[in-house]
Length: 260
Image (cartoon, rainbow, N blue to C red; front, top):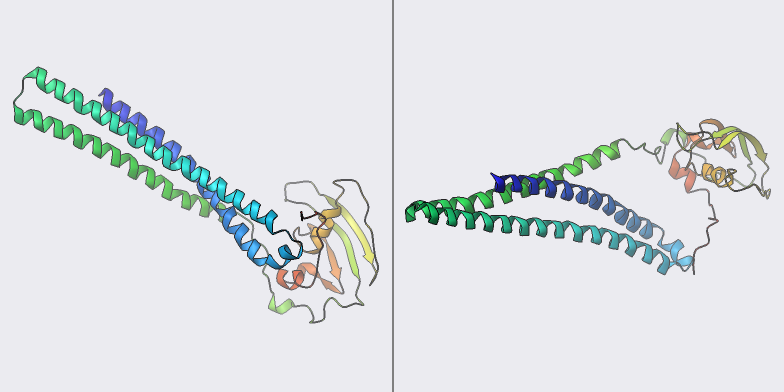
């Protein structure tokens, strides 16, 4: 009974630890694929800024984080195997001692020893398969998390495509009663902004840190959609067209300096 209780306690410890490590392992895998896709898509810009080493180091850092968790996972697996081997050896040892002390026949003693060994193997593989089942269910958990993420608007809306020459050199930018917030439950970052920019006009926006300068620039590419108001560029409301049509026609130079 004591050895059986140790088996159960060890099994629960291994299952909980492996499940949590596998959850972190799954979470650390997604940034690797995202970074790879982003680097491939923006390779021209990366080379233009001579930032290959910077992005390569960031990518390798994500890979290293994943490999560390993978190493912990397999070390946890080996630890479980070692502990089960030790418990199995103890169980077989006590079975042999009891068989010798009780004076049972050789056949019954051999049966008891084989049964003890079979019990050890059965418990080990039961814990392994139970752990594998919980690990596989992590995929279902990840899918549920992705289903809860708000999706971006479509890239192209066939019925609302802008003109081929949009934006033209003669169109201005009008912002009407703009309200921006990063999440529906967060306070507004920009409140009721209304302003007009004339064509070919050079404008400088000045403000303290956190006043919404970057947020306003992000709203032009619809990284943040307005909670209220409109942004009209050359006569077209940018919230009514597809993201691909919008972002392929506008260029934004980032304010973050890329390392050489």
